[in-house]
Image (tube, rainbow, N blue to C red; front, side, top):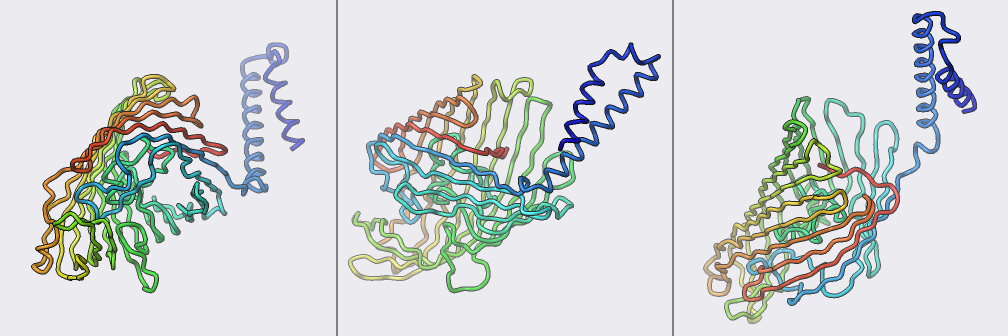
Length: 429
């Protein structure tokens, strides 16, 4: 270390002196400059080697995300979207002041071959939930990357993003009802980045199937879910860029219980579904920044569409009688949003969500009990504005008109803060 300091002092001295006093001609000056460059290269090499071999190279980067909201809404958040009572319906954003989950992230290189990441959600009511805990390869080569452990699936666009980087307080309706906000699972993921001028990424996953819409396979071998995805993107000059993707998720639901499904008389009943679930998705993102300067201002437009086909056997419990017969349905949803940063610290955004509950195909035994067609398309429109004094802090105001429940319109207001302490990793495109 002392030797590095000595050489740096020598370089400064050589750089700062008047070469005219010592150099006879331009050739002498050039020779001195070359010696300085050689010395700088040696110092950088020695510094890099010392950092790589020292204890600091293995110290993990630690980050803590603090978040909270104030919510004002007319309807109970636990009421599901019409036609989606059998689906997951996350109710995290309720009335009044609420501390949201704090997120603790730890990441570091393990050795030249692997990198490890752990993300832990601290529930405000107590307890810790493991969001991510995976190992990632760093030396496979040929554009290949292997990830194994617990991770958010690579399907779609928003699914891999943690809550603190969402552009709105909440996820779009289609993520809420089809993925329980996000699909996370235990398994393996292999991605390949093509050696091309444009961005081409192809990947696949095999997993336990614990993430919704799957059901945990506690006493079974093998994989319970599979995912395929592909992403493509490119720059158009220095001001425009885009990314598009396709994805396919397949799993099996076994004894999936729901107690919020109405029968034809409006009473809530219990049902139990066992069958196959397949979801296909499309996603697209386009970004624009004047002269490529995203720090000053930018415009981002993104949208996603998912369609889920489920078929199997439904046990419908009405008036104490459990009746089992065939059931099949195709449900879908999409959103389109735009976010505009009009000043370095200010952004505003608009999002529209829409769902289609589909028309169920029900066996004869349940035909008199199950509602096959709700004839209603849930929707919602949201507007937000946020202020970010730095990349580590953000305050957000959001209004929404929620028409996802038939006959129960809801005007919603949310205030949110997001604070990041410690290391702050780069966000995905």
